[in-house]
Amino acid sequence: MRDPAQFESFVLAYQDMVFSTAVRLLGNDAEAEDVSQEVFVRAWKHWDDLSGSTTAGGWLKTVARNLCLNHLQRYRARWKMFSDLAREDDDGEARELDFAAPETLDQALLTRDQRELLEATLPKLPKDQRVALVLYHFEDMDYADIATHLGVSLGKVKTDIFRAREALRKKLQPSRDSVGV
Amino acid sequence: MKPDPKDPLAVWADQALRQLPARRAPATLAPRVLAASARQKASAWHQRPWLDWPRHFQLLSLALFAGLVGAVVWFLAPHADAVSLANAKQSLAQTEGLRTVSIAVDVLSTLGSAMVMVLRSAHLWVIASACGAMAFLWCSCVGLGAACWRLAGDFR
Image (cartoon, rainbow over all chains, first blue to last red; front, top):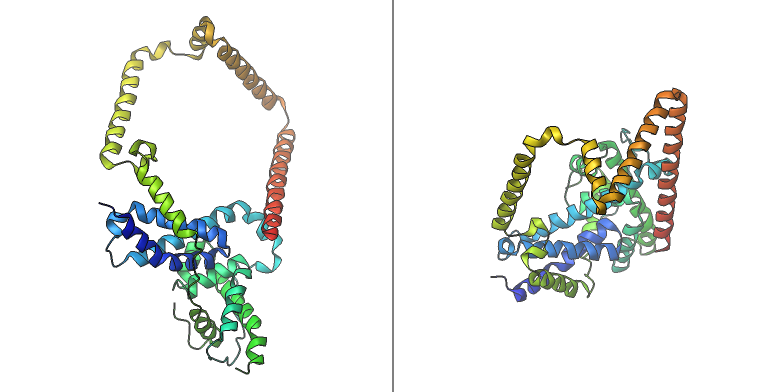
């Protein structure tokens, strides 16, 4: 028998994790809330299997990620041709990486302001860069998996992730300098 | 994914991003989820999408559907020779209530014949130009839509 009170506790326990996954991939709070709702509605449909399961968190994260990618793919397929034409600097297809990464970077902890700045910068990254970066660093996927999931070349994934990291570093650099980190 | 330790930028980005705390879900999320699940629970099985029906109802409905299709095929098979467009049109025309349908069938068949005649008589370049014009118009519509979508996204 399904217990709504138990399901409510489940939603409250996992809502931040599901919403974080969605908002970081989609870069939009309203869309992330819609997708999060859909994730939990699906969880309710499978509640007999999920209640008491130790892998419920992983199940929710996977469903959230897949729904976000489907959501992005739906629009990507529709507007792909024009987006690709419009973005001249985004021709990562089959280009191998040969970037000169900085020799050293400080490994210090970020201050609260820097974390807020980083969180605010993520949604502003170009969609391709943000999605690849989030899948790599938050979802623990490797380059090949990301390329397969997004239907793009390995070279483009590497380029996008490199550019996203560079954008984050540039954004944080002044504040790191100012606090002397 | 653990970044390559020889890539300082990747290591830095990994450390920085992993320090970010989980984003707090909006206060409206949980009530929305609970309302949606309550709605789902309250709805009868036949009001839900077929994929959400109980398994035995799904199987029963599949069996009924297969039986229905089988019955129609079994019933029509001996009369297959008699079923033709002309007969259908005639029988439609004889039925007072279905005269409009008969007229529509006439119009469509005339249009189809005209199209076939045009395609047979026109030069290849005329057909190619027409196809090109259609492709251009389609692309224009999609392009305009994409531009509106991007503008709307910028204003959000």
